[in-house]
Amino acid sequence: VVLNKTYVNGATVTTEDITCGNGVIHKIDKALLLPIIPVRTILKSNPNFSLMDSAISKAGLTSSFAPAANSATTIFAIINASMIAACYTSFTAIGTLTPAQVVTLSNILRYHIVQSRNFSVAMKNGTLKTLFGPNITVAVGTAVTVKGISNTTALTLVTPDVYASNGIIHEISGMLMP
Image 1 (cartoon, helix red, strand yellow):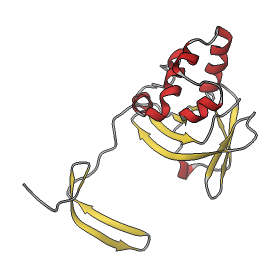
Image 2 (cartoon, rainbow, N blue to C red):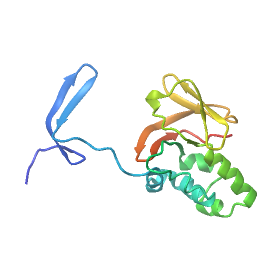
Image 3 (tube, rainbow, N blue to C red):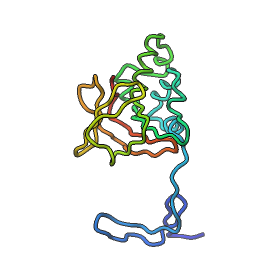
């Protein structure tokens, strides 16, 4: 048994608290590897996205949210509170949508997919083309925000840059509306 050791994802911290000009470094004994978990698995495993995941299934968009491993996709993920605010209040409510409502839901969900990998630090003021077709507007200031055509206010990237093997996920503060 080894006491007083610190670990990060299986790597041992060999030197702690090395001060540098813009932060602190902790030296470890091996390289950390990027995760090999795909976008859909990350969404399914996070309870904050359970209503979005249910909506993806109902809309028949499983393959759109599970792109090939070598693809570059950005997902703007909708948390449960935002789904509820948009009247997608429960698994039952989503499961009983009419065919016309499923089409609307599908369009909204495809409006949250961009077919390129966009890390928040590399985003610039401008637009991104969505899988649905219309662009979303990106603004970079003290925070990165995105705005749909029908949104009255911009949405903040709450948890940006969740890396997946086949894309990047940004949790956003609302629902993008085409």
